[in-house]
Length: 226
Image 1: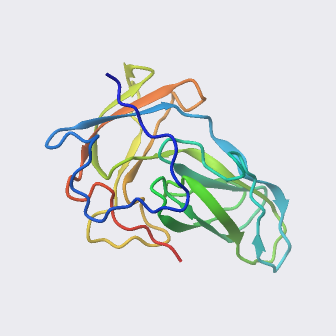
Image 2 (image 1 turned 45 degrees about the horizontal axis):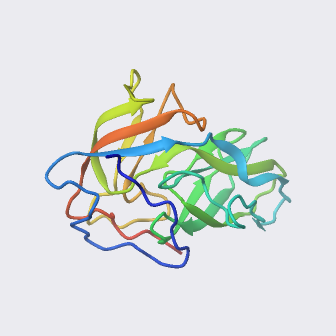
Image 3 (image 1 turned 90 degrees about the horizontal axis):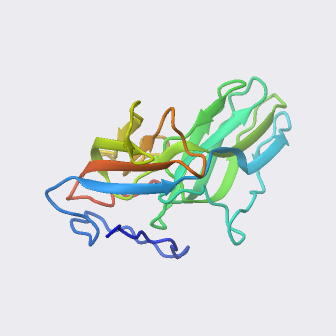
């Protein structure tokens, strides 16, 4: 029988359990398989449509909404935020939101000229995006990319399938933040992330991973929020 994953998460309840050691959908002392399903494609302006910044001024954006008036990154366990500028810019973007467990979290991402920059953390809900001041006037936009969040803190990726076939080109796996290392506004995701390559999310391609989990800290460290 295929594992059925939750699809509705209450928005104002924090389900994070510190040092979680047991979960009904985790096989202990063994690798665990997780299915991402058919993940929707990246969207460079899914959160903030193109906006012209004012020289020397900060800005807090009005977020686009995509589900019942709430801004989400549209993935089973969240995904990274992306920021894009059309001109030279080194302003700092602060993203505030929640992970799929409802933990409040925040991250800073810095523009790198006229290029798209990806965050490291997997946001499920996005509540606020603001940008620092700088003497320039680029057009910027914010959305989400193909770095996907994980349901539990992972130590190692053991196996990867795309559309039910072993991946010919391995995606990028980042382990969850080490226990004892405090989350900051800019370090790795507390549970880890996965980014497929070559075959990428397009609302049709499916992805599955076999992961070695940290069974003494399944939900990962507490998220940083400020």
